[in-house]
Image 1 (cartoon, rainbow, N blue to C red):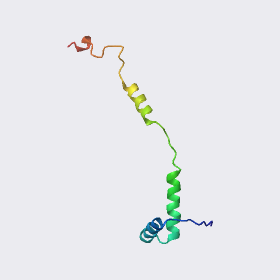
Image 2: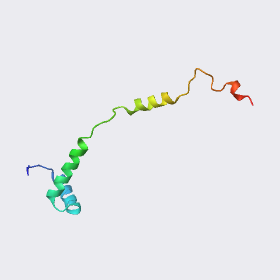
Image 3: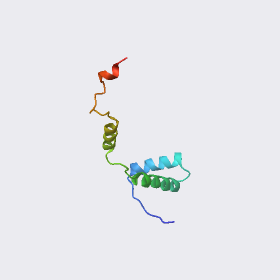
Image 4: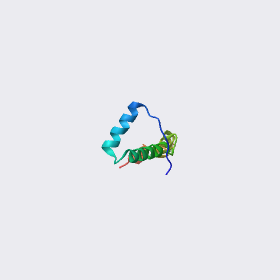
Length: 78
């Protein structure tokens, strides 16, 4: 298994130790899982950069045809 050395500030290392003690079996497990989670979060793929365009397309498709009068008086006959 590859190993590496990491320099952390005292504050970050104290937070890491506290988290490792309360949530994980060992510091090694904590480091592995936290790094894995960070990599997964960092490597997300953006499906659609501008969801606004999709919303507009849907709104345009749902509009009624304005070429005909939707409130035509002929439709109101009893």
